[in-house]
Image (tube, rainbow, N blue to C red):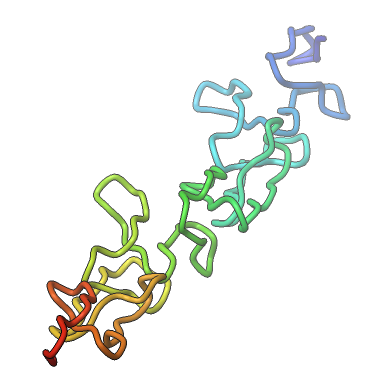
Length: 173
């Protein structure tokens, strides 16, 4: 690996090849020139398909670069989201946002401070997927089994601290 630079044979830089004219070098696919004119690998979430002096391009927000950094590949949205253009496993009880770059908690779940989606606390519910908090049920209601809504207790029961409790004989709500 050499190329002719001003009629002098010069050793090729790592991750490069001779240009077709033979009088210079170009970076291989997946590599771009840095400030020192060395061919360095494309950064995280970037790719370059062809050899040459071009720059690496950002992958779409729902994708990551392949290991060779020569192409971008969409994340599997049923189990992953693209966290800063790196496919990352979804936490349990979550789904990707519309653009696939983040996740949101399912209905009946809210995000904690660490990034997990936990069931709404007793007496609270959340009816739609999103990163908003669960909302308090009314005083005389309890949370549905899946935590997605608030509901009145069944006949013969009343809500005590948002938990349905059976009425004692000869009593009423």
